[in-house]
Figure 1 (cartoon, rainbow, N blue to C red):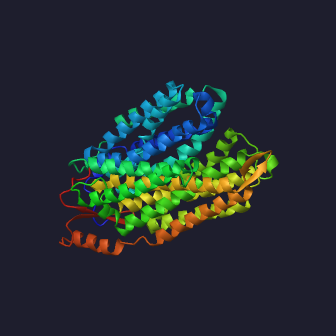
Figure 2 (cartoon, rainbow, N blue to C red):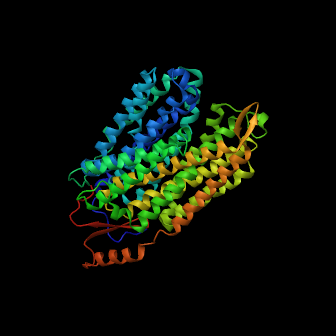
Figure 3 (cartoon, rainbow, N blue to C red):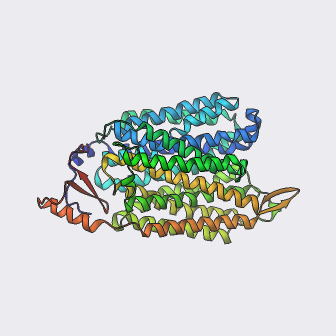
Amino acid sequence: MSHALPRPADAERKSAAPNAIVAVLALAGIVVSLMQTLVIPIVPELPRLLDASASNTAWAVTATLLAAAVATPVVGRLGDMIGKRRMLLTSIVLLVGGSVVCALADSLVPMIIGRTLQGLAAAVVPLGISIMRDALPSERLAGSTALMSASLGVGGALGLPAAAFIADNWDWHILFWTSAALGALAFVLVLLIVPESKVRTGGRFDLVGSLGLSAGLVSLLLAVSKGGDWGWTSGTTLGLGAAAVVILLAWGWWQLRADRPLVDLRTTAKPQVLFTNLASVALGFSMFAMSLVLPQLLQLPEETGYGLGRSMLTVGLVLAPQGLVMMAMSAVSAAVTKAKGPKVTLMIGALIVAAGYGLNIVLMSEVWHLILVSCIIGAGVGFTYGALPALIMGAVDPSETAAANSLNTLMRSLGTSFASAIAGVILAQMTTDFGGYALPSENGFKVVMAIGAGAALLAFALATLIPRQRTAAATAVRSAAEGGQGTSGQVEEDHGVVVAVPQGQPERQ
């Protein structure tokens, strides 16, 4: 694709070893997603391993979720203010520290502390995408950001069989020592290879806004994630839900009045950003449904008539090809984005995910059925994960890239949290008796898969509402190229997305 105005810093970028930068940032993303996966094989054993009740050990998972939700928007804003690479390194240090704490833990409290520290590293992927926007040549951006986005799925898919193998054959602490070692490797490579971006906003950090958003998110996610245990109509659940509404409304009021808000709600309200974020919630919901259904179908006893009676290691091996498909599809996603724009890429990906769930409803009785379904859904995820950051970066100023990408990542996380809660209610209500135990029924799984397909179709519908802004922006590009005064600064065209760069912003290096 031709560019009406060349980027002034492209020559410098090409000397910065783009391949090495992309590889290191993708590795950092994979390490973070591995961290989230490593604990899955030992969750059923945590009460015995930590000498605590099942309800208490569940906090080893919940703590990571809450920490990630709080850290992602805050770290993204700090990255825009004081340096994305600096905050990326800080996040990796927190991951390594949390992994070491967990590796040394033999009781519940240090395990929760360590998992909280690990969760604080969740902003690595949006930070990496933002660094790519500042450091890579134009022609490399679409494919690289798609690969970085896919690293979340790749790490999760490949990490599960590795974690299951380690847990089955060695002491469970090795899981966290492995996470610490990989994090340390990522830290060194980022330090040596990844350049610091010179696109910064500076200014004062919105402490009030960060505290308000953190309190609102924690209240909301606690109500959603623990409502099944506490009771959805219990005073605690309803109270936290009501508190979340009040706090987030007050936070929104503050953000609209703050000079340097944590989240620029006016930018977030732009149709391209708004509908992309809403589609991200639906996609997060849809994609997590598979993570809930497929492992249970594989592990339930064959005597149920629909379970396949396989081990956790087999679960990991069945889901592993999905990660490879995601990685392969990131390149295809980039090609479609270059040719048709990220909106079309997102719509195609959502339809592929929906088709995968539809197929799963009729194909769920053999291991190869589930491998096929997971690969189809993984292909759709590869498309959507590549399109989302392109849409976000096409609508925000370069100095707000990290915060905007972090908010988009948070939207996906909220979708997964709601999926977990709703699917949990459905599977708890639609059960079958098996030897005196209530197990999720086959129809219960089919309902969850149908809802997953519906969520993907909702994401498709929301994607259709994302405006195509190329015509007006392209006019601005031509005006600027001809020396006209129709814009207030530079205008760049990024793989089908035109990005306006206002005057006064630092030049991208």
